[in-house]
Image (cartoon, rainbow, N blue to C red):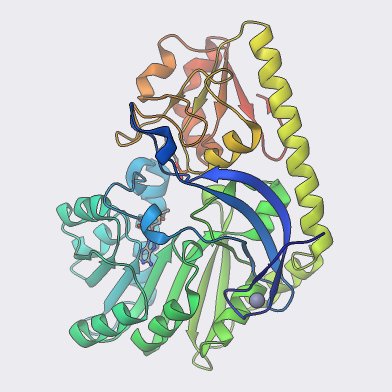
Length: 409
Ligand code: SAM
Ligand code: TMP
Ligand code: ZN
């Protein structure tokens, strides 16, 4: 028996391939004393469109429930990501922003992690960011921000006020936006004839390869491939002209779209399209096999944590990531199995994780004293975290990793 929905890109039929069950909002950390009955839950399930091949969620969460004044994710929390976005800003400066008085727009600029470099270089720019708290942080760094959702009407207003853009950029934001017709019509209207729309998001090819199922949560509505991006671009008079893989956030792709016919697609587009055809990313059987691996991870992780508990070992988690809501709620990980989660984000601290209510503590709690095991929820930042927490392993501690398989390191 299969569940279906209408594709948000092409109107075709989306057939479900995995159901994560009842899940909370991944970034809705619960304040102490809050009414548990008020917690928002929805059914997190994911499917494949048989027509345009876009993998997407079966149910949409209202955007205002996720992106609001108190949206807790601050991009600048990671040193590696600060470097990543500085490099991207420099790359844009050297390639797309060399003309006279160039103008850049960023969707989802968050706390200004990328635009700060361009602002400091005196480049005309605008960040469009609906989450008021992080937008204020960006503004405090000298970034020009408009507090709103990017959509077609926003794009047309920006065009009227600032003129056309040389580059539009979005990192970890486009895949968050179900209403793609409005976005791409807005991009098409706002971009100069020679302009580019550059965006980077988690790549379905990596999610399948690493079984990184925790990339699937309320905010991640789409799971792009070159093929599905190419299809969606075509529908709006745009064309995929470049793509490159990125190591960040567990494996992403940076896509470049231009007006159809304006640029010649690079060899990288052809090569990556061939790679993903060989990996069967548009085939149901591939995605069903992924689902079977998710269930195995769930079984192994729960068994390991139960065993640790029986042996009287202390387990804490590291990084109250949005991703971890999917893992914790799928596996039923509450404070009985995981004592607390430590995280550097003040807006998450002294609250409880969504759905499973594990307390979130400041980073300093980790070593006070070290636990026996640390469940690395922020596995996408593993190099950065393991480097700074070397003393944990020296003290005899072990990390628990769960993608692509459950293991101790
Ligand atoms: N670009 C940053 C990065 O890569 O670290 C932030 C990514 S964060 C996961 C996603 C951001 O997109 C949030 O700050 C959210 O408020 C913003 N967002 C969601 N919908 C949006 C929309 N329609 N237009 C612009 N920003 C949006
Ligand atoms: P992300 O996976 O969405 O980037 O979220 C990472 C979370 O992990 C975020 O809440 C910040 C937290 N974090 C730490 O607590 N310590 C760290 O060293 C890093 C890199 C992230
Ligand atoms: Zn479709």
